[in-house]
Length: 212
Length: 410
Image (cartoon, rainbow over the protein chains, first blue to last red):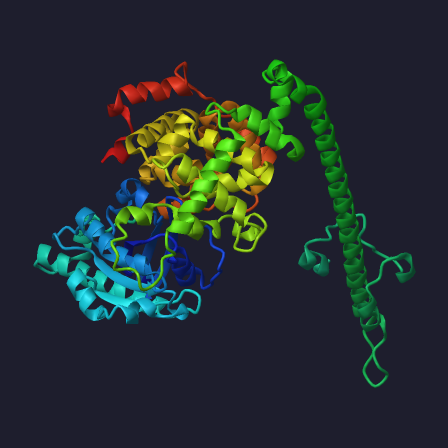
């Protein structure tokens, strides 16, 4: 049975950004394929699990939906621990939520880095794009340049409501996480990696959870 | 016999299984199927063998008998439900009378009596709930209706003078404190407060009331401001009290030590509360506690939501109100006791789960939670640990922060 040897990845992914930008909606769309305009505010942190088939491997995404109020920062930053990737979300109809993006990114990078010292892969989501793109067009911001300057691996205009680009954004993030993981495994163990070694040590990547 | 083993339902001992029943004996007959099964085959086809015809008749009769049984059962269930509801309504009516005529007029003399405590535990009738909450929470802060009006007027003044966040005027140095400064946050959160009730949303009957109370509070306690979770608490109070009284109860509730610790996001004090919770968790549910520890599931993950909203977001509203009933009487201790009661209620469900499934379960509890069962489980939680009560444990932990949760301090 080949299946028993299928490699399984477990990635913890953070979803952060200002209050009310649609973090919970994006997750609901991604995981449950539905949308409701009536989500309750997230207090603290909510969770979701998404399982993907990725090149014949199984990828489990643990999504941590973290409350957006700045005040909670102290309390919720412990939740950054051991994450492998992140979405930073803003609302294209609220400029202030875009201005907060750099803050969220700095906060994330200052509190979380991978075993190799690099920052975790982060994708920027310009959500509610079904309601207009004022922030994106009016400010004359070049998003590609913005992403490069701020260390995002990519950005997407998304709409949880209309189901636009959510899967694409997630795939982009997973692709980068897996690439990072491979980089780290290669740099730490130059020889061929035997599955046994990996099993014994629960994976050499400290950012992965051991699946018990 | 072959049929019986296949059908599985009509066992040999089943008294309703009609062995040689005739159609006329049945007063219940599904219309559409009778003819098809029991008619003879058309003349141009070979006739059904007698054995088969007999078998079909028997199958048909059993189906009918079972449908009938089901109907009867349903009818009985409906009757029972109706009876239960009547009984419940009657008991609520009686309780309301007792609260109104005997307890409330002699509040200070009766409120601590055994009988009142028992009644209290069973849930305060909705018609007197607001009054009892107000009395139990008290008004240590001496807030008057007039003070509420003043705070509200100030809030309205602030709303007028703060320009609505427009898309162009963003270059102004709005300052980061302004993002925190409540107004926009309140607006965003109001529509996300009990959205399914459709009464707090824009255009809903209580939208402005909720807005007013939260706004007035930010003027009353600018050092606390608006913090997520407050909208749920204010909403529950609005559902049970008039606006000014709801504000008074709101401000006094938030002024309780535990609530102040949380809403000011006093991190180290919050950790102390979590640590105290863990002491009683381990004491009451050692196996589940070990399971949580093994999976690195720390109490903050579920308690933050539970405590910040006083369970109003995580429990069905009527059940949350029952928790509030006793919380108003027993204070913070009851919040943590309720948490342990929930863990006790769902112990069997949680034990086989891994981290993510437990976290998911606890941050999104089932839609239907049996109230009586939950309260039985809460009652079974002992709030003493090595002869120390909740307050003593908390105090000891406060003095000796080293004994706090090792996981959370990292």
